[in-house]
Length: 172
Image 1 (cartoon, rainbow, N blue to C red):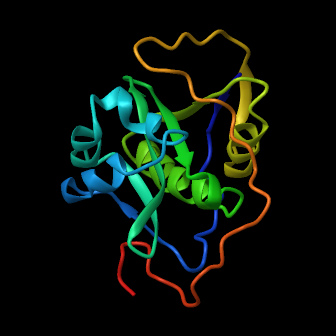
Image 2: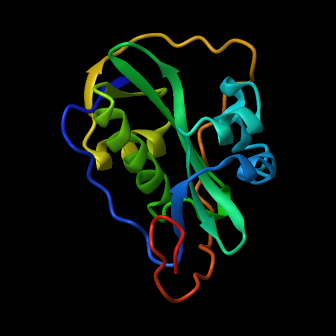
């Protein structure tokens, strides 16, 4: 399924998390993502290249990175959005927040954000629709060189959040 975002993304910044652009010194945080999540940076030939690119956004809980979003493909007219959230932090709006920031910048570069997922990945479809993406067409996606991620499973219990609100660029 391929979706397209033709208007500004809709999302909220979740309370208790810092959502900001990743920097070169954040590469170890990307490398520390679990096996269900670390695929998000692998099309950039590793965590260092992804964190240094200026294209990735992340959500931090305390000292740890729990969600990352970045483009899988940079075209002349489109940028393909990829996002992954650690299992214990899914369903909190972090994927939408990180992807929303990325989509704003994509649109600012004059490109259209696109979102591709399999029909059985209901969580991915929900995030895309929450952001305002609309269905464009069905197609086939071939993954080469990395293992295709499994559709996420929602955890039974959500983590306890810290109180307070942090500024999106990392300031308290």
